[in-house]
Amino acid sequence: MNMHKLTAIAAGLLLVGCNSTKSVTNDFATNTPIETIVDLTKVENDKVPVTINPGRFRTEKVVYRLPRVVQGTYSVSDFGKYIDTFQALDYEGNPLQVTKVDTNTWEISNAVNLDKVTYLVNDTFDQEKVGGIGTEEVPFSPSGTNIEDTNYVLNLHGFIGYFDSLKSNQYKLDVIAPSKFLRTSALQEVGSKTSEDGKTITSSYFAPRYFDITDNPMFYGELDVEEFQVGDIKIVLSVYSPTKKHSAKKIKAVMEKMMQAQKSYLGSINSTPRYDIYLYLAGNGETAPKGFGALEHHTSTVVVLPEFMKDDQLAESMIDVVSHEFFHIVTPLSVHSEDVHYFDYNQPTFSKHLWMYEGVTEYFATLFQINKDLVSEEEFFAKLIDKITRAAGMDDAMSFTKMSENILEKKYHDQYINVYQKGALIGMCIDILMREESNGQRGILSLMKELSNKYGKNKPFSDDTLIEEITKMTYPSVGEFLNTHVVGGTPINYTKFFEKVGIDFANGKVKTNYIQGKGVFIVSPDLATGNIIFNDVVAENSYWTEQGVKPNDIIKEINGVKLSPQNANTVFQGVFRWQPGEKIEVKLERDGKEVVIKGALTQAYTSGKSLLRKEDASQKQKDLLNAWLKG
Image (cartoon, rainbow, N blue to C red; front, side, top):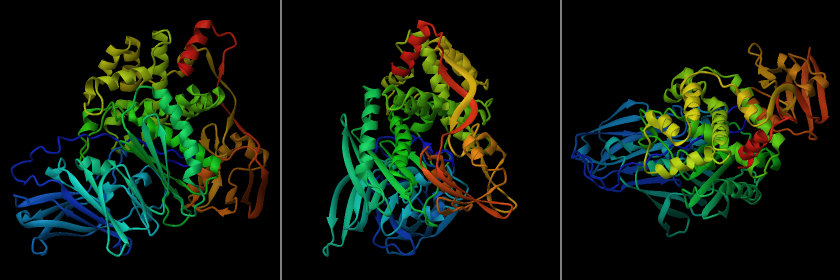
C-alpha cells in the first residue's frame, strides 16, 4: 500500500444478491444463465476477446457496465477504461447502435434484436507506473488484471460486466486456454472440453449471480500449486514466480503453520469449505505491477509482492498479508451491513464501520500471533507502537464513521490507510475494555462471534444501529468509547488503556527499521533534480548516522540496483525488510563524490515510545494482561 509497509490490505466486501431464479422486470426475458466466453487463445496486442450472450430482451434499450468500484478497494477503478472495440451484434451478426454514456457504461439501442456483446480487454498491470492503493491512473494491483504468455490474473470484474437489471441472473462462464496451462479458481467448475487437436481446453464455470463473478478470481498459466487442510477448510495456494525463484512448497510450509494457528484462534467460526490464496510475484520489468499487497474476496485473496524478496522476507510478508485477509471470514463475510450486502458497482454507498471491517481484522491479525506464540511479547508491543506512531501522523480528530461513509471523497480517502493503524488500535481498546468488564472472560473475538451467530453471511445488520446494538451486547463503557472516539473525533489516550494491563507507555530508545526515524521516512524525492535523497530525519536513525550519512546525500544505488523514481517504491520495500546481520552495499553521492556504505547491518535505533511491563503491576493488572494476550 505504501513503501514502508508491503501490506496493502483490503477487505473483500460481501454481496449476496437476490435468489438467482427470481423473475426480473417485464422488460426482460428471464434467460439464465448469461453465457460468457473469455478466450485466452486469441490474445492479440495484449488484449483478450470477451463475448457476452444475455438471452433475448424485450425492451428497446439496455445498459451494460463494467464496475466503476469493486468491493474492498474503497477507490475508483473504472474498469471500463480498459475496454476496446465494444460491439453489440444482432442475430444476423450486424452491429447495433451503441452509445457510450460514460467511462464504464454503454447503452445499446434496438435491444430486442440484441444477440451478443463483444469487446477486447486490456490488462491493468502493464499500465502501472507507481505503486499504491489505487490511483487516478490504474486500479490497485491485487484488484487488477494481467495478460501475458505465461500468466493470466483473471480478476473477473476486469473482464466481465453486467446488464443493470440482470445482476441477479446466473452466469455460465467458458474460459478457453492452452491445454499446457494450469488453472485454479474457487468458482464452481461444471465441466471441461479438450479440442480435437488437444491444444486447448475450455473450462466451464457456474456463478449464481454477478457478485460471484466478481468474487472469484482465477489464475491461469505457468503456476505452482499446493494444497493443505486447515481443520475442515481446504486451502489452495497458487503461485506465479516468473523466474521460479520461489516455490509454492516453501510458501505452503509458512502458510500452513500460520493458518493452523489462526483456525485454532478462531475456534468455532467457520464460514467456508475452501479458501484460495493467489500469489503473483512481480519481476523488475517496466510492465510489472507495482502496488504490493492484497485484495480480499469472499473465500480467497489475491496477493501481489515483489519476486526479488528473500525467502524469509517473503515469508514475513505473506504472514503479514494473508493473516489479515483470512480473518476477513469473520467480517465482513459473517458480519456486514446492508451497504456491503447490496453493493452497487457503479454508485456504491459505504458502511460507517471500516473500524470493524478493516481495523478489527487487522487487530486479530496482530493479536493472534502473540496469542499463539508466533511472535514474542517484545515484537507484539513493537507492532502496537508502530501503529500508534503511524496513526499519530494522520488526522487523529477525524470521525472514523464519517471517514468510512465518505471514503471516496479525497479528504477522507487520504486518511484511508489509518484503518490499519488507528482502526486496529480501536479494536485493541475495545478488547481491553471487555476483558476488564468481564474479569477477563470476554473480549472482542467473543463479541464478533456473537454478532456472527446473530447475523451470518446472508443477513446484514443496520448500519445506523450497530453501535447501539454492540453496547447492548457488551457494556456501557464500550458504547461510550465508540461514541466518543469512533463516531466522535476525540483522540484516544492509549496510556489509559495500557495502564489497565500494567504496561508503561513511555519515551525511550526503541528499535527501528532502515527506512524510518521516529516513525517518519528518512528518504524523500528532490523535486528539483528527480533524485532520491536522505532527508533531515536521517539524523533520527542510529544506523545511518553511525555510517556518516548526511541530509541531502543522493542515493544512487542499493545492492547493485540503480535507484530511480520509477523503482524507488519497490527498492525501499526491500530496505524496509532488512534485518541486522545482512550484508548490504549502498552508493551515495555527496558534493559530486561517490560515498560507499558496505558491510553487515547493525541494529538501528530511534527515539520514541516503548511498552514495558511495570515492575510494580498489581495482580489484577497482571491477570488482565494475561487475559488480553492469551485469553
